[in-house]
Image (cartoon, rainbow, N blue to C red; front, side, top):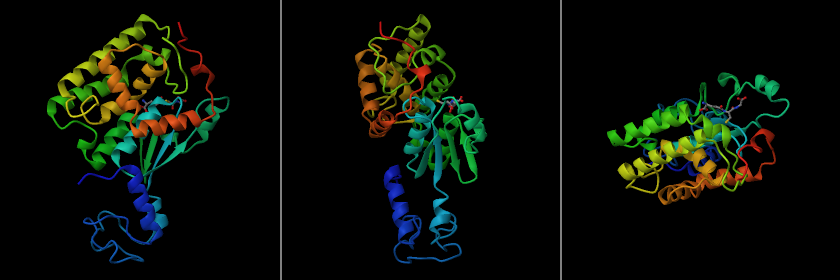
Length: 286
Ligand SMILES: N[C@@H](CCC(=O)N[C@@H](CS)C(=O)NCC(=O)O)C(=O)O
């Protein structure tokens, strides 16, 4: 049974709390609706899923909490956030404005980001804490099922995992010269040969993924997956720095950019009024 989208599942959990009912849907817990309130003790039918019913505050604490940076600039946060959306699980997001004069002392004081030594994103799930966007993807895939994040076919998954790992460990020139900045618009940015090399490599991988495994939809492996999550900030960079790309890549980028989660992130980034000067002056127009 497919999991509901995050908003819907969050709405259902909150509505159930408000009504004093177990938020675990039938058929996992068939008591829902018929036994409106368990005041204490485990539910006889879904004890393994939710240990207690009728305790809204306790259950609310079980909502996952994602700590992210500024939506305009934080590319790793975008990945962590898209991963939470893709999981279909309800989560609460907390934004920590990055950098600025007092950033070093602020990050040392924040218990929320202490486990990552002051980097975002960080996902808290009860007592469990996961940092690093790729670890968050894997943690959530373990929780809700691998198929939600990774292609089913072995050959496709092999390439998908390799592409994700490569994004995680490479493309320093592109990342340094064209940092994610959703609000910025540069007409054909001036970039080095090294950054151009990164772009060619990414476009080559995108072309291969689309040609070999993209038949099921407009994304790299057909349907939206971990690979699109990890490459979403690259889509943003190509868009905002005016990088010329072939038609197949433009079609893919449009699919990512117009995705409802991406649109929600972009709108929130545009509404932010924090500016990080160091990310406003790289890669100028030709
Ligand atoms: N490899 C990490 C990278 C995390 C990272 O570098 N995050 C940046 C924001 S995009 C950050 O927290 N910077 C703050 C700092 O380094 O003080 C991941 O995948 O999550």
